Image 1 (cartoon, rainbow, N blue to C red):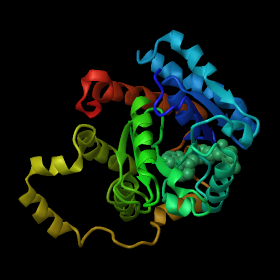
Image 2: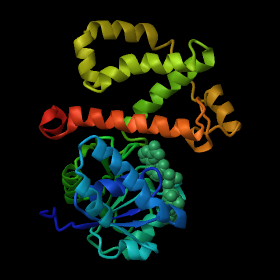
Image 3: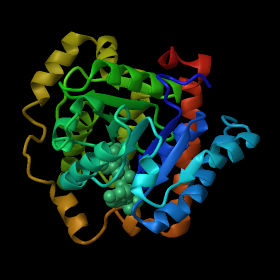
Length: 323
Ligand SMILES: NC(=O)c1ccc[n+]([C@@H]2O[C@H](COP(=O)([O-])OP(=O)(O)OC[C@H]3O[C@@H](n4cnc5c(N)ncnc54)[C@H](O)[C@@H]3O)[C@@H](O)[C@H]2O)c1
């Protein structure tokens, strides 16, 4: 593999929902990946979690069975943060969404990593100007925002601050493309970046429809999956509007924009579920129930369908998205 700007070894700090899939993606593309998590159990389970993910790639014929061993061998578990960072040219943190935690971690990493190492943050909402507030060399840092599941979702948002160097942005874009991602650069940083702002707008209305009892949870999920979600896989919202007719869109917008939820207080249904400890799959119950066997079945179904969709739309020469 011809390295991009000398980058051969990367580090991932935080190996939870996001970090393990990010590490897998780099390793599958041929990078040596130093992996660190503050939790010993997260470190101990990394290889088995990635092995299980790769089994789905093999089943989808996206990875040859003989690639699994070498990919796992490129994941190098580190016992300390300092050991993870030694000798890497690019690193990303994927620790919990806690501003002080990320600020302190990035400041430490700036001191321990080599001066040329690019520092990336996988925050869902904090621009690097915030999470990197304690950095002395902010030109090295930017956000690379992956989406869950990180090893299956094509796009990564790339969000520099006004102080990030152009070379760092360019190298990061090239590396993400090399590992098979579709990097989307943002021209300016803003909280939530691009995609999560749109997701929050959708969620506010969906939760309000639940609160109003307009339809059942299953009906709401089925309605959105079979319309907006179905189309979004093949066309972005702006192109969809072109096909629908912008005059129609303008009228619909005028008629409805005052009708949909605009309050910023949390929706009742979400407050109640979280208050009762129903956090989704991590607690076994959210909008739906997840006894262990159902969770495994739903996750397997999700991964297998996403892999087929990815293959159809993004793999090699089959989709325009990769060109
Ligand atoms: N879960 C998602 O859907 C999603 C999507 C996009 C971005 N993100 C962002 O990714 C980041 C990680 O989220 P997640 O869902 O993977 O969280 P997670 O809780 O699943 O994993 C975080 C991991 O970080 C470890 N950790 C905590 N402090 C650490 C430290 N100082 N050093 C090293 N490891 C440490 C924890 O032990 C844990 O394993 C967050 O900023 C989150 O907002 C999450």
